[in-house]
Image (cartoon, rainbow over all chains, first blue to last red; front, side):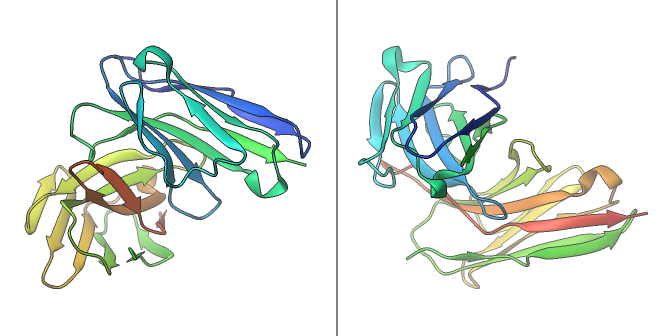
Length: 114
Length: 111
């Protein structure tokens, strides 16, 4: 079974530029999560999707971050414009049904904003 | 608010047993999960305690005591490949169904 796929793995951009991250969850997983992980910290939830519906986006900075999950499969997270403080690893995870305790993470996108 | 505390670093030798503690100040959660993350890698699910007590999965065991607001991950027969960060995370269920992660513990296994 293929795991969660994310791209790109690394991204370097200048501040004020836009950036987008892509995630393909495990086949059949209806729940998809985007997390932010700063160095030396645990992952912090940005947004959770149940199929194509964003059911928890309370931690998403909506002035500059947006996300979508068209057709309830792949998802894209966008930042526009990026700020220096956005430098972090952006992780995507998926889970099946209500099994939120067991989430399968992708390798993440390491973002550096200069 | 929710707060989970873990020791920042733990060092142990190969073949030994190590316990990583997780104390929390929160309530109303469904259970406690543990994840392993190697440097530069993805967090990987290890164990989940929905009920108080001990859960055993091979060399790894996890424990939860809601009355003591405390849990731990026990790693036995340590191997070099166990060197990684370990995160506890509380699960809030129902409509929320979200994990709140702790600060993580960096385990260094020495030969």
